[in-house]
Amino acid sequence: MENNFDINNLVRENVKEMKPYSSARDEFEDFDTADMIFLDANENPFENGVNRYPDPQQISVKEVLAKQRNVKTNQILLGNGSDEVLDLLFRAFCEPKTDNVITLPPTYGMYGVLANINAVENKEILLSEDFQPQIEKIMEAVDKNTKIIFLCSPNNPTGNSFSDESVAYLLQNFKGLVVIDEAYIDFSKKDSWINELDEYPNLVITQTLSKAYGLAGIRLGICYASAEVISVLNKIKPPYNVNELTQKRALERLDNPEKIKSEIDSIIEQRDELLKVLLDVKFIEKIYPTEANFILVKVDDANKIYDELIAKGIVIRNRTTQPLCDNCLRLTVGTEQENMKLIVALKEIN
Ligand SMILES: *Cc1c(COP(=O)(O)O)cnc(C)c1O
Image 1 (tube, helix red, strand yellow):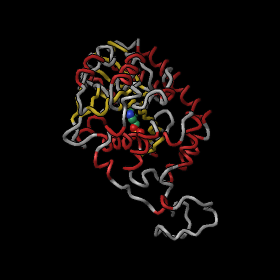
Image 2 (spheres, protein in one colour):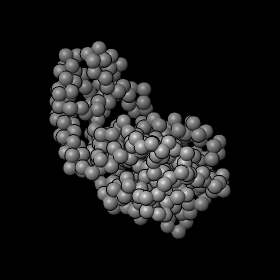
Image 3 (cartoon, helix red, strand yellow):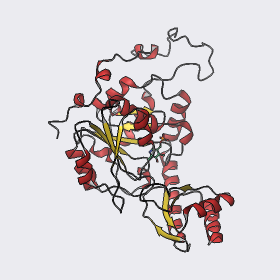
Image 4 (tube, protein in one colour):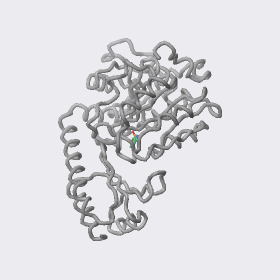
């Protein structure tokens, strides 16, 4: 594996050959900036906190993440949400109308949407009945133009993690990139695959501050990969893709890991409580195991329950049209009060 993985075989020709846009702030970086006068970027000189362009490399945020996750800053790329990171992966590695990717429904809808936008074929290989990757079928679907396999673990909307054996098998046997979307990893007992980055040159991990970290509104997505993969993504990313307010807010939040940890613990506690009381709701036929901050349940009539909850002022996600998710609803874990109201409403429908 180590021997025959070559990033150059994966990068699109136009990306290989292009010269990246060089911003004013990219070209100037080598001095102590405190006393400098900046007349290079056509900014308004009057200070208001955000009159200057943000750091295109977001180095302060990366340094904190690198320390917390035990990686190097050159193994990190930040994006405007993980959605931007995923889009950059398509644009860097998938030639439109030629290459393909593999996704495993039921899963996060953006992989398919991004494949469409980028005119890249999306080969969908259903998960098994217990929502695990079907390794043999996946390997059969791989051809010479398959660039990326997207694994979402813990998976949205099913809530489970994929087995370590399956993930390791794909990392060892697939010659393209294996992207593991770990948007929900902080709610799982499993370790992040970040610890294996040095082991697998084709491993790409995406995480986000949108879920466990409580910052969906600032849009900050994170990609961890080899320095080689990151440098390709860096080459094509929009110069100022993460704005100054986002960088500031992320730094503030990351500076208080105890607070984040205690919120996560509380959400997990609430989730486990919710799992117990849902057992008493008669029309719930199945509660799927979860390692995320949501619970997938199978009910007798998903559309009916969904509408009745809306009428009671509670919005959940109806997943009944997704493959393997007939009559399934996805419930996000809220505060204790919100969850109590959900339970009361469900029992009234009962
Ligand atoms: C919510 C979610 C994301 C988050 O995307 P952002 O753009 O970072 O907000 C990514 N992947 C999955 C599977 C998700 O459910």
